[in-house]
Amino acid sequence: MTDAFIDIPGVRNFRDAGGIGALRRGVLYRSGSFHTLTEEGARRLKALGLRTVFDLRSAYELETWPDQRHGLDHETLGLPTLPPHPEDADRPWPEDQAALYPFMASTAGPSLAAVVRRLAAPDALAAVVHCAVGKDRTGLTIAVLQSLLNASEAEITADFLLSNIGLGLDKGPTPYLDETGTERLSRPVDAELLVSSLAWIHDHHGTIPDYLRHHGTTDAELDAALANLAD
Image (tube, one colour):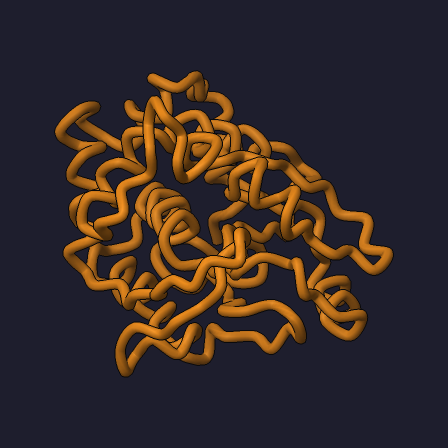
């Protein structure tokens, strides 16, 4: 599946999310943020027919590291997966990676419903889903969409784990500076993390479609989005 990676200068971990289940290639991509996108990277995105970008980062991240466009005319939707700020007093983001994944599932419903709503539009594709590095928040969002398109658990997991290669984490954690200038460790993902997120959805809502309906997705929107994405 490493053939899914596409070189977009200035964007980390960019790859095609399709080619598994009924999700066709060339319509839905996943990546890290565009805040260091180069002009050449923008030309390559334009060649992919980019129409919509789903940015899953918080408003604070967007303000600190805004996406670059270089003349691209796509629509960007800011749809934060997590609460407004990592240190939000009411719902702080868990530092522990194992705790983060079920927490994401508990907060991602409105974002995911909005993604599906936009994907139901006839002019939405091609689309890119991204967060900061395209690993955790993007990983959950793409897994939900792939699940809706009948990808197997093994296929979804294999795609999820490609972020370790895409980010150079296949040999272990690597240090990085976050948007506040604080040095942190970026940690590899493993299958159990994604399982815990999807298990939260199933435990609390029964099915992924019911989870989306709970957050306002209509059956018509769901059907239209899947028809747009499917082979």
